[in-house]
Length: 350
Ligand code: SAM
Image (cartoon, rainbow, N blue to C red; front, side, top):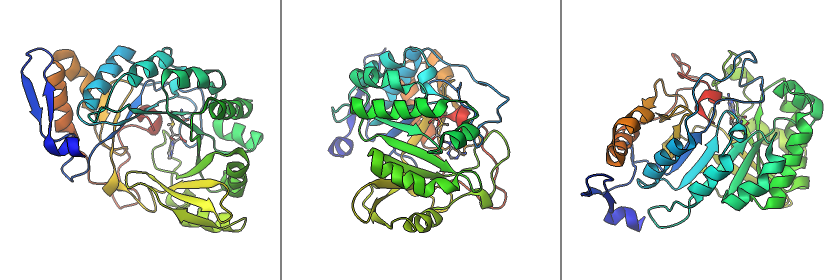
């Protein structure tokens, strides 16, 4: 914070003149923007029923890793401190380990290492966890929507994926990618019978299980308010097994955090539908084709890649600052007149 208060000297790449940025990325609602999610492909090897139609493939181009690196480097120069790689499925992208190594060489405005995380379906993680850790990855989040192989296959529409994902989680733990988080999107009538099972899983496997409320971000038209399993309901259903006690979570953290009353096992609940946290949102996203999205529910993208091809880093930085200033106050899920965003989750990068 001290660095922010005194201002940062940033040098334009080409003209060698110092450009003074008095503040890092702060939007017009005074939210500091410190977290960046970068989708490095919108291809995915799973066809989760709540995410994809199952018929469509990738819709947008992948960029060379060097282009994502330049985007991230400029954003880190503006105050980004956490970078999460996502997709599509990021582990499908060749060069991801080397990319993590390059990110690990960057330093924040405070001169610290970046917090580098990855969200993956875990299918290819078993062999990649250690190389990713060695390259500088800090943390990993694995998406897994059932702790039952058959149910898992019905959701992902992939056979034998469950074993791969479990092996991926085990490899991530062994590699020390702590804390390993397991994300589960709950849908009523589909996998809400897994709540207690996931509670037991968190305790037995020593991973943080995080339930995510289903958002209207799917390719298809599956979402309805009735299908969402809310934070309150999760707490009530888990209490039938063992009550959860809330513990402190950082202001910028999306998940509310809980531990079982005997102290063993952590559960997170991300409740953007029933308890939105837009007021604390610290995120922006880069899509696989190099567009900035200021909110998952944005109606438009901002063409960072186009600007980057024409301008030097100073021009790129000014563009980013301008875009951040247009960040939406909040999403409007469940309100009359709600419009689905211009892209679905798999094509944004969750
Ligand atoms: N392929 C990677 C994975 O499976 O984690 C990264 C991309 S995936 C789109 C990122 C996360 O978004 C996953 O945890 C997934 O379950 C979640 N997700 C996808 N569609 C969602 C939706 N409509 N509502 C809430 N979460 C969703």
